[in-house]
Structures are given as structure tokens and as C-alpha cells.
Length: 212
Image (cartoon, rainbow, N blue to C red; front, side, top):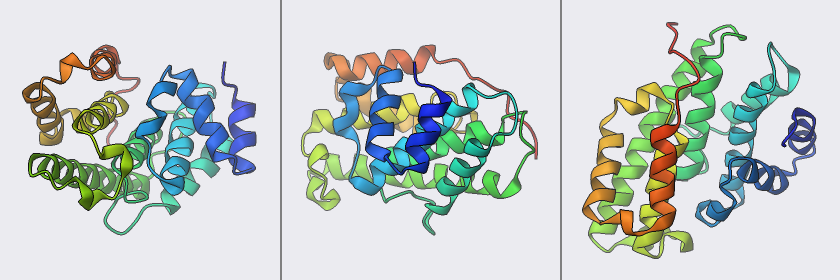
């Protein structure tokens, strides 16, 4: 069981790879680590996923939650993305969604805006990924993990799972585009993708969106 103490220690010591391993193991996603990006992207994913777990373990404002949230917000680029990576950006968007809808913390309009920009960036990156795959232009992404069509499909499925309980994403055209792409490419033949799609379907929202 991944404890709050372990999350906070890894975060403050900047042991991002260790934190990522722990949180992926907690989520039973250790086998999907290869779909993560470079060092910066892995750091963002680690803190974002760790932040979500930390909020599950706390019942009120906590220094670790506030510091991790601020660190995450500081990593956002001007275009809304995180580390120019679709998985890292999706993880960050999911963490921001959980944070702004956590009743234990006052609503922060800056975080709300950051979440909106992150979702927009996810949509842009997903559209580019789908288009590049369709045109066999995958080298544009300079990412070895996206060299094979099956890995691209698995990445799309991972984004679908990470954002499964984000109500804004659920209503976006991006979600439909991912599902259509996975269906069109017979992705259900891949057990990795089938498992993520199943997990995404059964992941119940942990909150109700609250107004600013």
C-alpha cells in the first residue's frame, strides 16, 4: 500500500522515478511504464498520479498536497501541455481535476484555468498522434515508445483510463475520437488495450464537478 508518507518523501527528495514506480504498482499499471515519455514527462506523471493518491489519503488541506499541486502547476507550458507529452499532460489534467473538485480545498480559479488548458492540450496532442499514425508520420514525435501502431493504441487507451473520471473530458470530442480510433484499428485484439478500456469503463467518478 502506497502511503502518504512515502509519496511525500519521494516528492520532496525528487525521487520521481521511484514515485512513478510505486504509484503505477498501486494502480496495477506497472506494465505500462514503457508508454511514459522522457525524464521530464515521467516526473510530471509521477507527481500527478502521486497527488491523486495523496488526496485519497487525506481529509483536509495538507502541505504535501498543496506543494505537489503548486509544483505541477509550475510545469505547465504556455500551450497548456506538460513536458510536451500526451500521457504526462493527461495525468496532470486528471490530477488538477481531482484537486479543483476536492471539497476539502477551496476552489482555485487559477487551477481551474490550468485544468482547462491541459484538456485543450490533450485534445491537440491526441489529434496530432491520430493524424500522424494515419499518415505513417510517427517520426514526427521522436518517441521510441510510439514506433509501433500497437503502442500508439495503448497510449490512447492509457489516456482514456487516466481521464476516465474527468467529467469535462467525458463530454469532449477527444474521448469519442480515441474510442473511434481504437475501434477502427481493432485494438480490442491487444490485451493491454482491452484491459485499459475495461478499467476506464468501471472507474466511477470520485466527485461531482463543483462550480467556481
